[in-house]
Length: 159
Image (cartoon, rainbow, N blue to C red; front, side, top):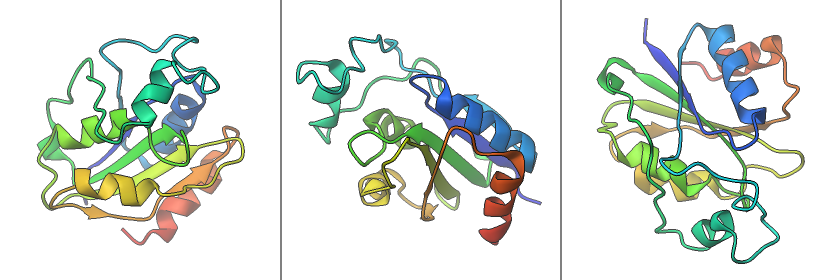
């Protein structure tokens, strides 16, 4: 049986809740991807062109630093990576996370939270950061998604 990890970045707590429910539903370990410099409310104001999140998302090469790396990444075969959808893609801190490890032979499965956006170009933007890994199609969930729905989604992946 493969060992699974649910790694997530959460700006407001919504993705954290979904990640915790997912990890519990599938018996996976959990890891929070935390920025070295935490985001403030001002940083997350997507309507402000000078906000940190806007500047990062307008630069596809942006790689915000991560506070702590997962020290036993080699132990996992399957990594679910969760995040809020920003500008129809994953926040660039997700690229930072993925590029911090040798992912050769691993399966990466994105999941996102959003109030209304779809997955957009997420996989297209994440693929270069997943060298040597199998990147599966991601799925967007509402913050209120339940244990059964998440378990059924994972079962349907045929891992």
